Image (tube, rainbow, N blue to C red; front, side, top):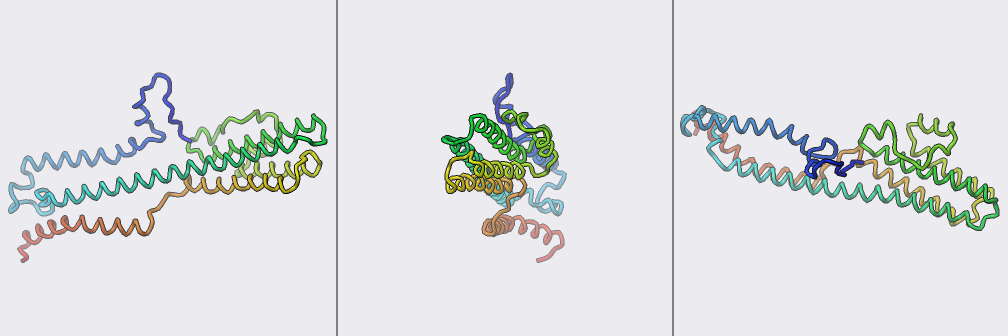
Length: 271
């Protein structure tokens, strides 16, 4: 998760230049050297380093006098920027929807676990102990899932806040802390707790309703798996988009290649 909130004493425009979640620092590293190269070429062209006219122009730099390659390249860059922004916008909302989807499923499953304890024949102390434990496990499940999706190293090391995880025994916490599959471990703990509570009579709901709650819990895990692909897998352009991009690239570079070829022919006196 990326924190886009403005901190105290910082102006709003500071968010555009922060290192986390902003494209400007990385774009600057790419664009700034190219801008310096463009300025250098322009200065050399103004000082007639490459020649005064088309006849005595240095081979390879003849295209500086022709505007067709530049207009074609500008159109190509515009197309790529619009395409990539559209793909990034779609990916962002897909990831946002999927993340809220598994959190919503787990929240619904936790609410069902609490509701199923009403009308049970167990003592108040047993019900209270079950509720305290299951809510903490759901909190740890959500925190571990968001921690795994977070790009921040501080979240990976220190984790996220939970609802008083100290209420869980130290052995279980040590096992969770040393596990490489924390989300799956919390998921199995919750499943086992629900099944054991139903068998002991602590949960008074019928079996089909409990199965529905476990299905909701499983649905959240499935959506969590979908959310992980947005974190670990780079989105690739579809085949149709690649075809359109290739056609557009070929059409716009055609003018540039013709100019370069004409310069080569003039230099080598080829008709």
